Length: 98
Image 1: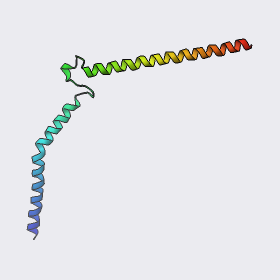
Image 2 (image 1 turned 90 degrees about the horizontal axis):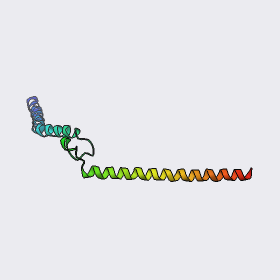
Image 3 (image 1 turned 180 degrees about the vertical axis):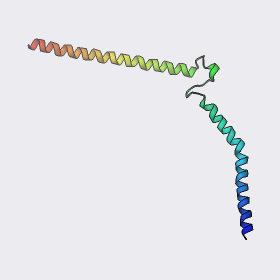
């Protein structure tokens, strides 16, 4: 009885080892691919020698950022003009009152 159980244990260990051995090539390829992807920056579309020329994706992203920056500058200028107008109005009110 003990010999049968020992043989079953050996068979189970052998089966588990064989499954791991069969998947070793796939696991190695996965790890290698994961390592390769770690060298690519997020958002980049081209590998290293070709990234000197901007891609269309990069150009669109740059144009959108410039547009957002210009809109932000315009809003700040309008806010400054409104604040100056309010201060002038308050100043004129105090000058006429005093």
